[in-house]
Length: 288
Image 1: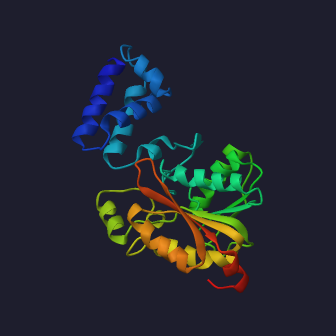
Image 2: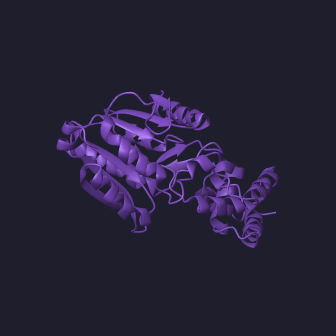
Image 3: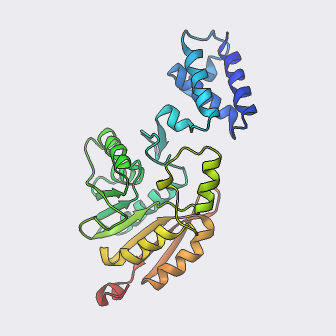
């Protein structure tokens, strides 16, 4: 059997299983089974299938048809040009979250006094690690309420940074020591009913990393309320959220004393990241 024939069978299998991107998934899973790149796979379509690949490929197809994400099957996801280990303990990093990293780096570049950065709800560690890798001079730490997620973050930190970031098991900022010039987070922001619907469809990502309460903004609003007491004067809070939540969070930030507020769009042109700078007067008088 040729590579082309087996790839076509894989596409058909995923298409009839109603997988959203059957061709892309088939290519990625076959490249994984062949231990090669997508480019080399597509260049080898007329070749005979190497021994053992078909069995590995069909096993991957079965997992994908059952709802397991491609990244979990491969145990890998590229984010901000880095290859992160991911599995069922953490959310799979999304391309839109790269906008959050870019905003953090932009703010740090604009203000050399910005040194201490904390990544809350770190999950795989993708935000904090990408920031530290891009700006080694920053003092970056991370936290998550999930001990298994912190295990994955530590693994990625060792692989990609050559050592561990300071990390804390914490419900948002509750058990995180110190103060910061910037606090960033991609908190869970799906509504509870959205999470329930995904569960019915066999969604495999951890519910703890998805559920943001009835309106999806419960954790983001908690961070907005608590961050002022943990930010240095003029510090920033940078959050990812669903596009329809940004207006609500903008008003929440303004009420909490963040009087310089920027909104950044994602790759599709939708509002995705909101950044607020703590008003110095707010910090001085201790009003949050």
